[in-house]
Image 1 (cartoon, rainbow, N blue to C red):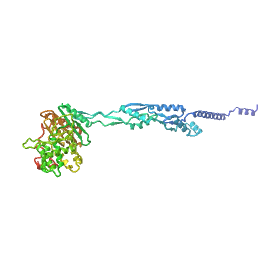
Image 2 (image 1 turned 180 degrees about the vertical axis):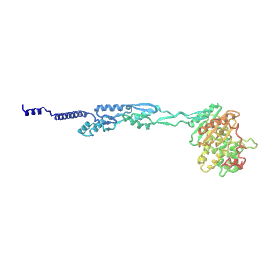
Image 3 (image 1 turned 90 degrees about the horizontal axis):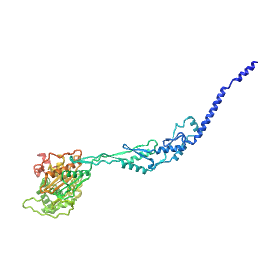
Image 4 (image 1 turned 90 degrees about the vertical axis):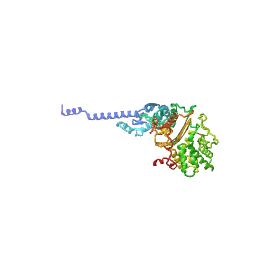
Length: 545
């Protein structure tokens, strides 16, 4: 055997391993490419893997699958919380409807816009489809009016009104009611809109507005006074007992009216009307001797001084000393001011020899016809009339209105109104209205009583600025007045009003420092003589005492 033959045989036995491997790898690569190409081509009916519709990932899903996913996500109820109470809101109840076809068309278009076939195929091969998500916004609608109605229905079921204020008849103070709350419909609307349009955040804490605690109002005060009188055994609208109360908030104008139009004997309370008409007829400064007459009339209820004042008025309006001309002028003035159920038609009876008696006709009046207090035929008023007069004096003194507005020709000045209040602020009885407020609080008032009636009216100047008018008349069918019964009732009504207007300084118990009867005027709060009467500082005489 030759050597050459052996070498040829060895070369034929060697295999081209590298080439074979390369060929196999090439074939495998081509096969894998074709596999993924076919697989990618089969997915063209599906949405692009990088698409999200209204916050719902629908990439890689068939259209029908994506539609089902969207509808399921947005059909979930929205959970509303009113405080801690959960409420389910069905989107269908407000007409919520998806524009699914439009959104899926937008999703398909969004996938196509990410590049051509081979670009998207390359991203598919490189696994970059999920790195950048294409967001397709929600396209949906609902009926706004239905959503608002749902919220109003929720409010009707869950809103809590503030509890009604109550009162304590022992302390005569108001007790606040419970706190209330109310659904803020306007504030809830955008929150529900956002929840309905979200596939994931479908919980809403409804905004609830807390209402102020009901601390009571002037109507609560009126109920408290009525119940207080009943609790004391005094029937305010009875056959043999009648109570009339008029209270006016001088800041807001709100009023308490408890039978305030019933006619009563005015007694000495009519002297407020005489004082008003006296100033109306006066065109110069008050003479000192006439200031003394007023002090005796308003502070000591001196009837002779009151008659002299009406005689002076008669002199000014008629030119002669005619008390009946003065009486007529007083009644005319008061009627003109709106006190239609108030009048005086005769002088005060002094019980002395030589007094000229008589009367003038009474004006037509129309008090409450359902109650009869046996009012004096010559001298009548109502709680409302007298309270209204005090209000007009106050407005004149404080604001230059009231009496000044009623008499615009300068017949009454602001200084004169201030002098009226200053004079009556010295009426220091220490009982009746004054006995129902703390010691030292300023009150300008005028009282009057006879055998079956007690009345007192005036202005309380609260330290907190909440000044008020209060006018109280009590009548009991009797031959002699029971002061121990009626006077504490007036003081209780006064205390209830004080506590309402001054809740920060309540007088929770009746005062124990009051005298048994009213303090005497002379020697206590009447100036010691004409020369000491200063209508601008009625208690000024005490400084040099």
